[in-house]
Amino acid sequence: MQMTEPSERNRVQVALRIRPVTKLDKDVDKVVARVCDSNTVAIGGERDMRTYSFDHVLAADQNSVFKTIGQPMVVEAYKGFNVCLFAYGQTGSGKTYSLLGDMKSSELCGITPRLVRQLFDEAQRLVEEDPDLAIKMSLSMIEIYMEKLRDLLAPLQHGQEPEQLEIHEDTNHRVYVKGVSVHPVLGFERMMELISSGNANRQVAETKMNETSSRSHAIIQITMQQEFRSTGKRDLECTISLVDLAGSERQGKADSSGQSFEEAKKINYSLLMLGRTLNSFSERKGGDAFIPLRESKLTRLLSESFGGNSKTWMLATVSPTAYNLVETISTLDYAKNAMAITNKAHINKLTKVLDVRMLRALTVKLEISLDKLVSERKEKEMLVFNLEKNRNALQLVVEMAQSQNVTNNSIQKGFQQLALANHDLKRRIEASSQGMIWALDNEVSFLFFKGRCGINLEGVLLGVRRAFCCALETDKGSLTSTKLNLQLFPIGLDVQECEDPMKLVNKDISFCLHVVGAENIPSEFSTRTFCQIKLRCDQGDHFVRTSIEENTCDPKWGLIKQFQIPKLSHEVISDLLSKHLFTFEVYGFSV
Image (cartoon, rainbow, N blue to C red; front, top):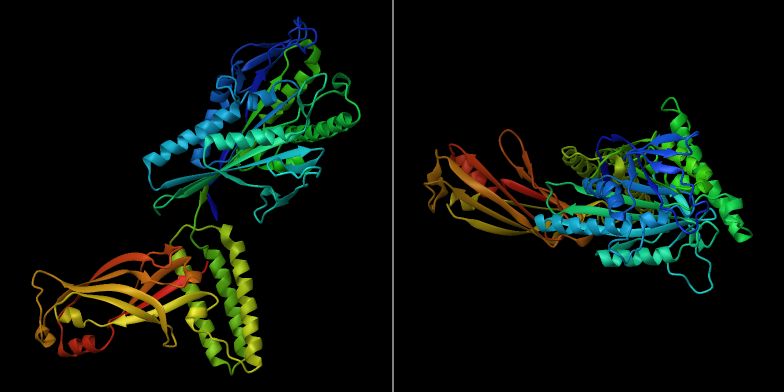
């Protein structure tokens, strides 16, 4: 379950990188792209020169590019924000080199290897500082080729076409690729091995503009979870997306034909849709303008990065020569439009508590089912009695959950549980109509486990310390295999053993109750457990609850409470010796 905080509005950060002149460049003497300063570039000749300003105009070395873009991404990711970097530019302008580079060289490797190393270095530092922290990372790689999605890390059978994947949306309208493989990763070397393997599976081809031109878009997604064992800190989750777009190219310059021509058409179509999306952000006057994010698979997959829950960086790469001036200006216009995009990023916090609205909805549904059952099966009083207990138990959990900051993200799961409960209820009604009564004791309840026991105050009145290991009973009086461990003892400076409790008449007694924990709670109901203590007193029953323990059949609550009873009388002492002062109810839930 994921809980989000109020969003933080932030603009897409745009950086420009001008590739050095290479042997494939035409008219190498005519350099038309010049850096003015760290934020401005000039394009064109002396008569028709125009300038563009961006957040960063980067130097040529790989390390400077990483420090400008990659390091801030790591910092924001560890805060719990989703982050995204997408590289856009003409084919052969240095996108893949900037993102990956020579992954075996510490000097020439690109943003991705450096970012992955810093992710694991920071994880090691944080775990050493906080032993309660565990950091988990996983990797997925997706390729968009000819408007078709495939998993770059899925094993391929010889001679078989890769499986085509589909884009779906969850109940919160977040886009995901159904069926893509997710690979848990424990270290830097393993993640880089997977990235290298996925990159080797990409579609590439030689063109006149680039000897190893990427013929597809590739998306690297790293999911990171920060989980704390203590309840005082919130777990965090984020997604780090690194997008290497296929290069835009003009057909005449690329000299493509046949399959390459078809690839180029699909590439240019998806980039055209991306351009329209960027233009829509730049041209819209108000917040209600239509943004065409569904026009292509690329823009749909990047929808969170454009105006959604992400902090986004764009790296625009261009050629410096006059031969590519048209493509360079097109790239700069796209980058300028991207600066108009404002995202609504928020910290993604995970919570394990039950959702209040979900439980309220469950309670309402159960009450409706109960009313219908009473009207149709009045003679089944025992069945109705047990259903009322289930309803009251859910209301109790609602009260506990209201003291915790829960969200709507678990409502869907609650509806699934309700559907199962209603299915079980129908089967019970059908069985009743056939003359059969299904067992409804708490050990086999379709919602939760409940066991109870009680103790009196004899040991305290005798001035001795006692430990109890009480076997729990169901509401029908059947013994269960679950036991509750307790300690009860008098406290005070004048505590001493007393053979006759009646000698305590007109005196005050103070004592301490220690609810240690339970043993052997049924495993199917061990997801969440707690103990409720009912104290009998003149003003009415008083209730105390332990904390909630998760995923254990032997919870350790360690609740300690002190009590005092003033001015004991003969009647009170007799009552404390013969009747239970404390009643304990242990609950175990399957969700």
